[in-house]
Every structure is written in C-alpha cells, then in structure tokens.
Amino acid sequence: MTEATEPPAGATRTVRSDRRALDAADAARVATFAALIAVLGLPGSLSLFGNAVPITLQTLGVMLAGAVLGARRGALAVLTLLALAAAGLPLLAGGRGGLGVFVGPSAGYLAGFVAGAFVVGLMVERLRRVTFTGVLVAALVGGVGVVYAFGLPVQALVTGVPLPQTAWLSLAFLPGDVLKAVACAGITVAVTRAYPAALRHRTREG
Image 1 (cartoon, one colour):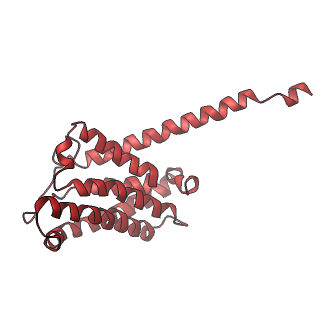
Image 2 (cartoon, rainbow, N blue to C red; image 1 turned 180 degrees about the vertical axis):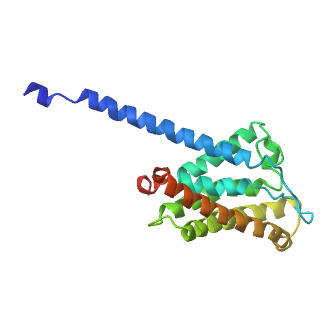
C-alpha cells in the first residue's frame, strides 16, 4: 500500500525534463528561423524608382516564421533577429545593422515584420487544415498587408514624402511580395506533408 501511495517522483522528474527539452527545442526553432531570415538578406537588396526602402527577400523568412512556428514563436524569431541587428550585427538586407536602421525609412517595416509574423502565425493556427489557399491568405494579410500598414506611414514620416506618394512608390514591392506569399504557402504545405509535427503549435496554442 505504501508503494502505491508514494508520489511518483521519477515520473515528476520526467515530466519536468520533457518540458525543459521542449523549451530547448522551441528555442532552437526560433534561432533557426532567425538565422533563415538573416540568410535571406545575404543576396542584398534592391531599390527601385528612387524608393528609400529596398526590396529584400527577408519578408519571405518573416512569413515562413509565422506560418511554421506559430504566432508567438514566429514573432520571437523576428525579434531575435532585430535584437542582434540592433547590437550591431549586419544581419539585415544589404549588410545593415546597428541602431541607425531603427530610425531610418525602413524602421516601420521592421516593426511590421514582428507584427506580420504574429498575424501570419495566428491565422495559420486557426486553420482547420493547412492548405495552400489558407496559408496564402495568411501570408498576404500578415506578411504583406500588416507589414505595409506599419511600414508606409513611418517611411512617409521619415522621408517627408506624402503618404499617398509613398504608397504609390511602394507598389513596386507588391508583385515580389505576392510571389513571396505564394512561395511561403507552397513551402509550408510541403513541410506539413513531409513533417506533420512541424506545425504542432496549431494544437498547442490557441
């Protein structure tokens, strides 16, 4: 009887160990996607039609972070990258880093990266089934719409260019960003089919 009523100390240790291991796995995923976003900036950036904000592939990494990691972890991956960039590491497109980038024309877009990853993740978490169309809509809303909503007003304020003109100039981003959203949807669906556990946040986070 005594053995039956003793607290399962070993089981308790196992549960706690599993939680620690899970936290470590999440941290590794966050770090991996922060690195992915940085790597997508290695090809550099391209400025079109005199726009003060360059075109970069890093938006694709932001979309993928939200879609694959979920809202909280996706946003954390972007925050990790931005914190390292603020510390001076040249991790943003074109080898940019330091506090100066957070007061320049791109500052709003960088804040939008965090919000965008969160919204993409939140929308994917709410999908009953991960489909190309569902992820595409999430990527367009969060990775394009939200990022623009943060970025355009700040760009207009910093550059002194009226908001309507800034928005007009930024239409040059739109075709590329739509293609990134398409790529995000295709990659996310492929990852889900090949490794279903990759999107287990859909059942763990509300």
